[in-house]
Length: 65
Image (cartoon, rainbow, N blue to C red; front, side, top):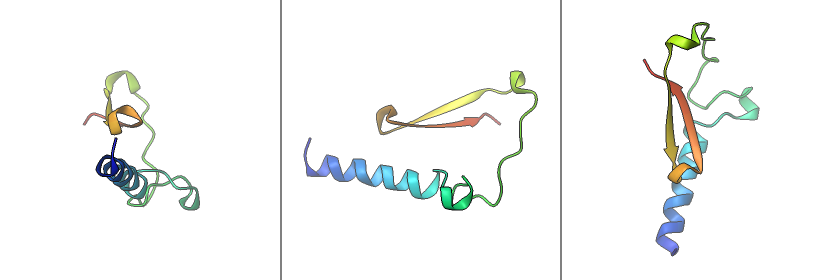
């Protein structure tokens, strides 16, 4: 662990928070979203994908297209 590693971790967390994370001030919407995603009713037919950020400290989930 050194300063370069710490800066990388902080930059990755900031990018996730600024671009993808839900915000209380926006009614749990991420900054780039205009509205909440539609509800998926046929969940058995959808595959859930997980994206590890910072080695799994943060996980993003999305449905496969």
